[in-house]
Image (cartoon, rainbow, N blue to C red; front, top):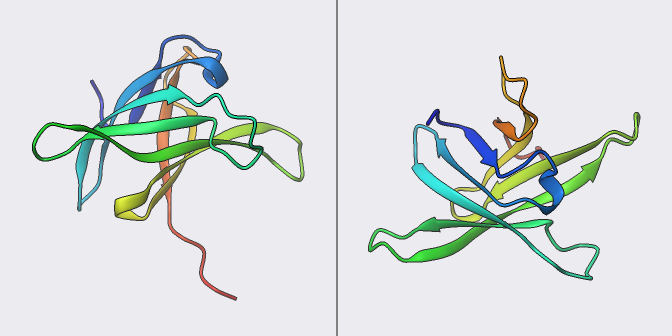
Length: 112
């Protein structure tokens, strides 16, 4: 599997599980993504899990559904807490399959 890609079980990402791999210069993890059924509007749409060094499955982040304020287009963002890692999810380059999402990193915004 390519790194920095999440493969969801189907193209309805909002309700789908997924698996993938995220690699940077400081970490390299395989992730499992599961929908989060919550009535809290501030809750993530998905929970993100990875394996600890001893092999235990631990929750390490979340995926949030967002809306572009200018265009109204919906998109998803991903956060891995322990590494202060933030990314958008988007169609992977050269992919026609909407269930394959590239992990597109972005840094934290600087304080104004």
